Length: 262
Image 1: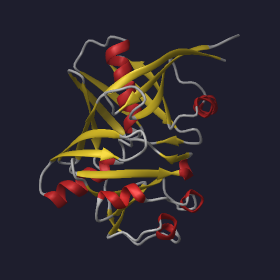
Image 2: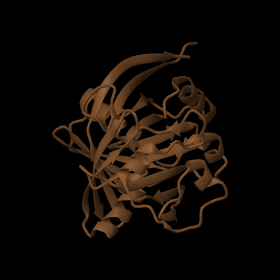
Image 3: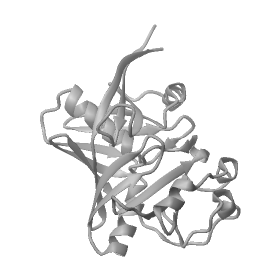
Image 4: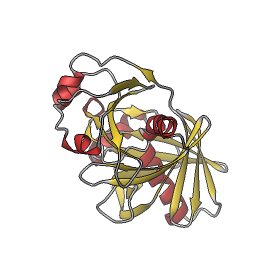
């Protein structure tokens, strides 16, 4: 028996195709075996594949990299919301998503989608063995959040020029490594490296901004911020710190609609 699953590929945190971060989105009627979802994500070979199931007026969502299931993913959630609102014609202005990171909301306002995520809790930390050497430049500060290390640098040029040793970064016990600095045309910039999660460099990482936003809001003394992720594809985000929540806004574009046959 052949099982058919709809698949959408969406570029998130961008206003044009071939920008931002591509994610695969698969709506399913009921949860598939974990091993099968992981195999699909591996076959898709994108940073994230999101699966969602409609449950009453809400949705359940899970995210898989090509190698592991993760607890939270921003760009694949934005991509999923784009599919639900724009391609599946969900009529309300807000969708609710149940996930491993708790209840999430996505609000639609014109062309802009806003994620409502829990803010990360982080504290100052020492660099894990080999991390600074792997990045090739010592940071001003280092923090450790729930899943990632965040290293703060002086300026955007340093972030752009980093040429990390991915084999050494893969040895760090964390989901990934965030590097950040003040921006010129935006409030702050960042990059995100996660070879230990199957992603050498993620083009735009919404979940990393649950760490970045509280840090920069505190440092700059305001809750409304703009951000740019300096990957080759690049991405722009609007961030708002609202107490223990972070609102992350961006646009998305549909690249492909297809069907998986298993």
